[in-house]
Length: 218
Ligand code: AMP
Image 1 (cartoon, rainbow, N blue to C red):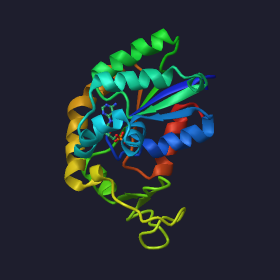
Image 2 (cartoon, protein in one colour):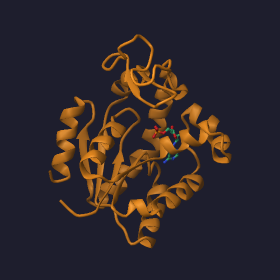
Image 3 (tube, protein in one colour):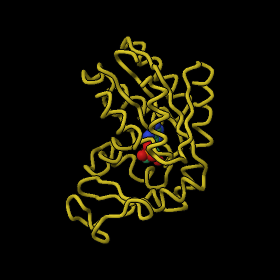
Image 4 (tube, rainbow, N blue to C red):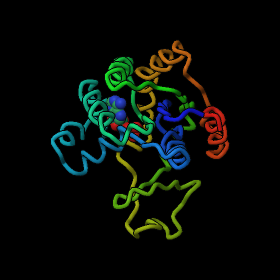
């Protein structure tokens, strides 16, 4: 294991990147940078950025590289990323991957591991279309595997749980296609650099976690 770990999690939406990120954060005490979460927060606070990206997120399309590169540059420049970070949901295009390399060069950092959590379209559709979230506290549920105890109310805060607009089946299929077209080349990019490790994200999340920990040397 190395001292400071900088990790990228790649893979289709619904492969379980966010879940694995949480395990890694807990174990290694590094920060979790989810660009999807950052954008959703911007939308819910109706900031200038949020207003710009709202309809793009709802349609499951990609926000422009310029906006994303700027957002990530600012985030990685903050002091708390010095002890290590996980990027979840970025880079999603080769342009973003190249930009990230420049940003990190400027900050005297590098990526140690790229973990590719793979899952096929049907697995992703089944998982995500059953996903529900609490709009108030952010807790995530699944109608097949992780139901709230009390019907449709959040176990944590009692609010009515909802389906994210971009989690509807057709939008999930659109997001998967966007992923195939834009992010597959990013996988090749890191494979060429010999820092890519693949895990099967269609497996049980604890099994996936075991594999991820093996990759990270623990
Ligand atoms: P996620 O939660 O990672 O699936 O992200 C949700 C949505 O945010 C995506 O469907 C995109 O619209 C947008 N998004 C997140 N990260 C990026 C990125 N790196 N580049 C472009 N759009 C992004």
